[in-house]
Length: 499
Figure 1 (tube, rainbow, N blue to C red):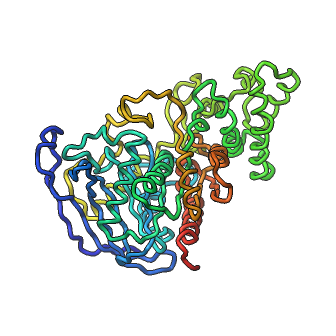
Figure 2 (figure 1 turned 120 degrees about the horizontal axis):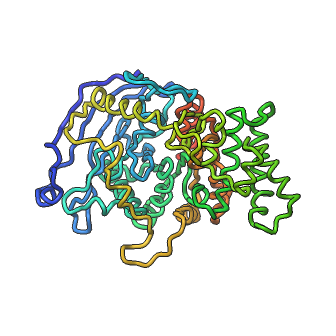
Figure 3 (figure 1 turned 60 degrees about the horizontal axis):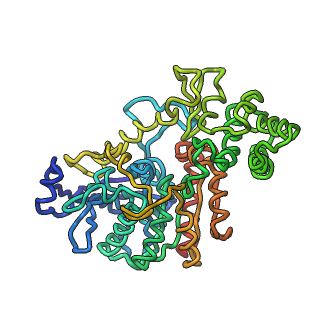
């Protein structure tokens, strides 16, 4: 059980409505909300502090440029205790998902079987299985999400880009370690989706610019090299390979293929087929023989549940997002992208791909849970708007180029795997845990293997775990329990904690 004790709260006036006026005004002290709590986690009784508030990062002249808001769960102020820095993805996502669904000490309860979560009031429960017994946790909202804002002479666009984002997150971590006297604490990075893209880049910035080695990295729904998770580019042969096992898992789940055998064996067979047969065939193009083509059509039907006619029409190249519409088209139902266990009856039954994403029905429950938790448990009473979704300008102004403004750049798929490879070579103690959902049609699990088994990354440095869920696999309760158990074991191993 969690017991909230009286909170010590300080708050500043509402944020200035005009950014130019804000830049001219003196920057006030950071706003923080502190509350004391008790709870039992994995059988260990703990007293901990939640210090929710702003950390300022600064320019070369020492002037504040951004206020990054985080939710810090700290036990007993032990200086050498591990600390895990946690963020979600987007780009443009606050930490709500991993905070309220995955790793926070309280969690939102939604149906585990991919049913609609209904409407408020939603149920929040204690999460005694979380990892607070082995690590402090800092949930971070990047600039333009949550309560985080550009301040002083900083402009929000200064933080909206692949490189800019990594630099600001690394600066936050270094400032947090200094402010909390935690430079000798083991450091774990954890990200989900684009948050994994970020984690690889941040690990390199920490090493190169701040001389900080991290002890471990946790990828939840890996997305480092975007070629394998970009199915909507017609000539992207790799995506027609990396998605096959996820489509196979989805077809199995929905009973569109023979699912009377062993699931794991079926998935492995789909991996072998995709890499060893389909990839060479797509490389051959129009040199492929009619007999081999017919064989591949039959095998694709076996693994995806789609008709031979459809597979012929798409020339063996199944777009994973179109698959979500095609699998149950005869019923007028589309399956989810973030989690293909979810379904939705859409109006347009002849569209090539789903109009939306059936799995997004959980979003209102997660936001309601966080807003209620902040007010009722953490004592956060602030006029500043919590941006979830993010600043409406963020997506359109995001810079994917890894080069500074004004430098020429031939666009390519986003890829921070080389950053991870570089850090792994320079830090032989570092290991990476990868958690993937079988039913994730956004960041497919086979793409994680494809990405991390190359780029000069040693196989023994990567630890893979698979769960019967989607992109947010923790929505499925057995997967949530398994994810926490695996993460806890990984952190203990990487920080030298005895069983």
